[in-house]
Image 1 (cartoon, rainbow, N blue to C red):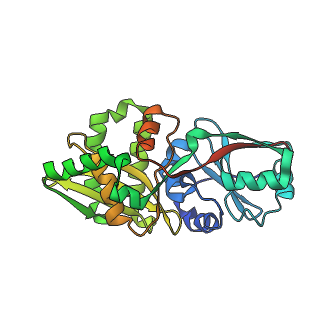
Image 2 (tube, helix red, strand yellow):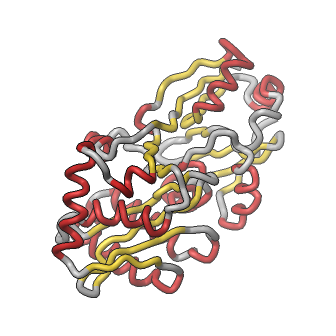
Image 3 (spheres, helix red, strand yellow):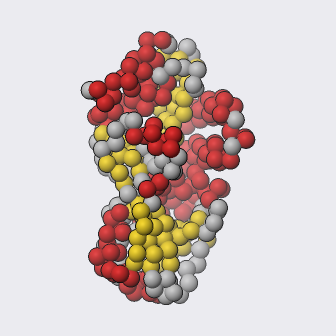
Length: 294
């Protein structure tokens, strides 16, 4: 029985989130905020069958992602045989689902590590305190920012969207976003989320102001009861230590109730990987490519 896919719409949020809440292993790229942000770029579609949502992207090439819902209650052999009798390949399969499929279906699946999609998990307490030699450079830069500039951290909301977008435009002019497809797509993704602020309850956002101007911001959301995911974080490079400052201050003032901070994947980019590793992750949310042999 083939799946009936339909393009993602924002009205799917409530039903999708109810299924996402049932997943025993959550990763940031399956949050609805992430789906909506990148939908124009990736052309997301969803199908609903056997009590599960089945995501698919169509750009740059068609790719099935892991199903979303209550994994433990699914009769996987019957579900997968019914929907994919000739086999299928799923990308970005969270480790918990990979383990479940391996235990229940054995050699009818094969798995391949997708290291570039692993998500970096940090201790919120460590990134706030910045104690010890591991964080010495980060703490110095954070202190320099607050010493050099007359700065203030503010919780921001719907009424501040225009100011965030103005700062984002300055950041894009510095980075030449219009000339770089990945940055151009990210800029559009940020705009899609911020312009639909009211449709995403629970969105967390904070900004640093220096000399009266917004110079950095972070946008995140709760992913679980004890984990916050940081979707977007930007700072103006003219301000020394601005990234160290927004990283720490966002967690201290907007996320102190969480134990873990998810700063998403490095996408296989060496510079991004080096930057994320420099903050000393405590673990990873691992993902795999899973081949169902049918």
